[in-house]
Length: 204
Image (cartoon, rainbow, N blue to C red; front, top):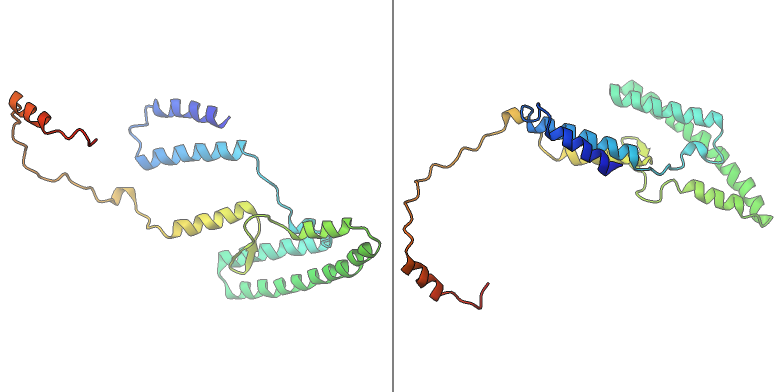
């Protein structure tokens, strides 16, 4: 589907009446947008286990985690010191609330199952702790990012930040060098024979 979609797009894209009137940057953005759209539509993505599905996370803790993320986004956008303090206080509270059921699960449910030779809860615990089998969580500000697509956005922003952004309209136009015109060439049969006699056949 990706190859067919790009083939149809390119055939109409190149024959469009506005193709030559648009700038190179505009054509590139249109081409890139279509390609990314096809990739997002037709390439399946692996769904990672989130914190909300951990065995010791209940509905109340899920809402607290969601509110913590919401406060983080507000603090990041506003940059207000008071909002950051509110977020940090709520973050510590949420972490304390999560540690209690986690410790209880580890002490009781997990320990009892191992004593009863039931390994299923143990493997569920290990699987739940392993959120991502590839790149570990990335710290951005005060938040750890474990979602694959969000990690990609972080790396993309970091990669783009090392380049200088130029506007197409302000780019320096390189003029052609003013070189003298070449004199007319005179090719003679004697000259060609002389070159052929001195060719080294051992060289390419």
